[in-house]
Image (cartoon, rainbow, N blue to C red; front, side, top):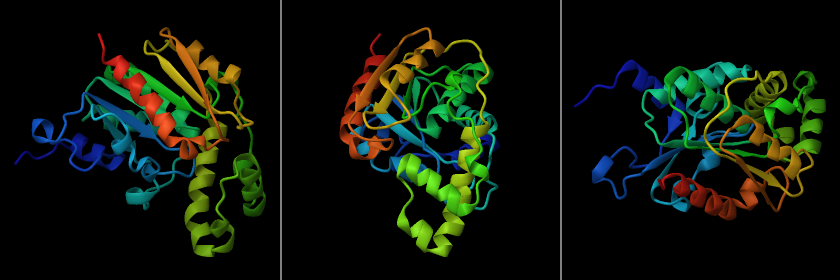
Length: 266
């Protein structure tokens, strides 16, 4: 039996793979491309549960496990987006082999972008495609602010008005609030303190998804992701608000799956 290296063991903390992944030619279908999926603020790897059943068999989704939640619940919650991206890239580089792609929703879009840059700049691994969702391009400086410093009730009110995604149990159940609120607040701090630093453009295409009813993004603002790549950007709007990826999951994954397969064609 092969003993995993320290880097490979560390990578397991960061990635949740589908059951049966890594079985190689003995598995039911050997994937041709890995898709690293990065959750939104307050989210976890569970956001991407079931994606392996709806994506093409050639695509194997890897859900990123962020510190301070799920299996990493007892680790400190990070507030530096760039540091998280660099650590994620180091962990992924130990087991990820090209071709690969990334998908990130909301906060996850910035994390996916910075992880892609770190994988390229430090490890020489550029993705075949970057898919971003429900988040304007980082050079627009849209998300500066101090919402993460508000007291609990004000903070929840602002987040609920902005995204409509605060479950009633967070307000009603003290234990749920104690568990969930620090995660959401730390992720908000990551978003609000992140500052884009200009660098070498990506050489992979970018897909930018948005919701037609999301007040934070428009077709025009999403299209500015194209300024960060030399390979072009395609913008697609789907019905719904900021969390359209839940209501429009089948349509989103159908489109994303087709685009991922397209990258495999020489």
